[in-house]
Image (cartoon, rainbow, N blue to C red):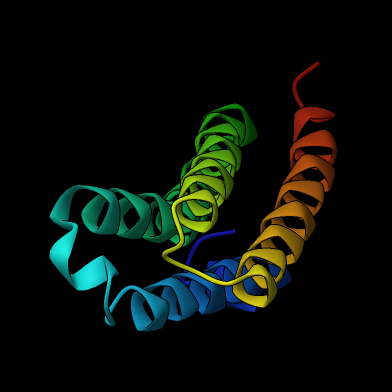
Length: 122
């Protein structure tokens, strides 16, 4: 794609919104005191749109797909960390379910993007 076309990708927009959401919920207690989990979930959340953008700007679809897989892995990381945050009482069920819904949607969208972009080099 190139030329910042990644901003037009729905999956990039959704994952950027997830990162903003994660920052907002981790900017409150008890996350504020838990630097490790807070920073880990933030890094994973930011990694999703960042890798989508980087992949979309790559010269070949093969390179792009590699970054989309990394983004998909980061989505699974966010869901794992949110599960832990829920189980230790950092977030309530509604917040957890919202994160779970968003991560699942993003992963499905990434899988479709990977499938489409993989066709060009298989």
